[in-house]
Image (cartoon, rainbow, N blue to C red; front, side):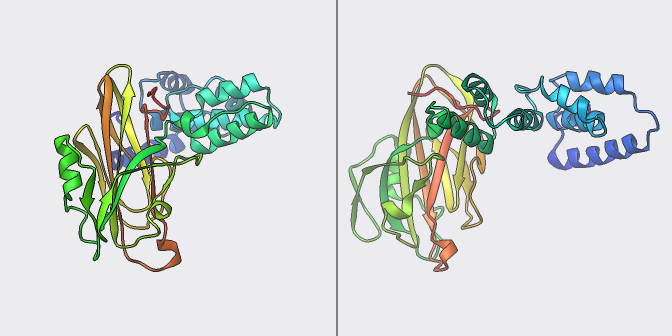
Length: 299
């Protein structure tokens, strides 16, 4: 119970205590544990711990319980439930695969299900299903020699925040203008190295607008191997000055309230001057979704 609302460090201590008490108990009160697990308002990580206590020594019970957890609000429980369903057979019917796809939130599960649907003759756009923004207006490069311009607000950034963009700006190597860039990658990854001829020691900006039918609270999630900032409707929501420490889907996330109609998005991505092969990647991916990872409906 105490884990609900606790900090990550607090949860770690509480889990340690709970596991010690459980392991020391000669006869755990399963009825109380079952009641706790059934209450989806409890902390998701705590519920998953209780699930393991109840089922680690009882594979049959684990199977039975997971069959009812495809849409559980605990992402750990949902992950195990979908993994179990996928392991039943390599040849699931399309309707069953569709059901699993609607429930799936983990990128690996989504990719696996879409691949199986494709083999069954059903095509699903993975990037669209996950809510990735795949079309952007791009401009750059701007100077980042010395990797010390992360907090420098170039005129294009200032203008965007004020709601007025010019068609051209002074860039790192001369005048730069906006151009449209898009990606057809399943994970929505925008390969900036390709768009900007593998430029090093530079900064580029990507901007777009997304249209939603009504006000809604959601999350903006970004994967980026470079230093990056993300603004939505003029508010800075994500900022990480790190270079080449890895990239994954939903690497960084922030809550955001979108308004009905058009919402403005700006991404600033910085590349350094490292010459190692592993430091040549220059890319980002961005999507909007609810707290569970389900894509929101945009225009």
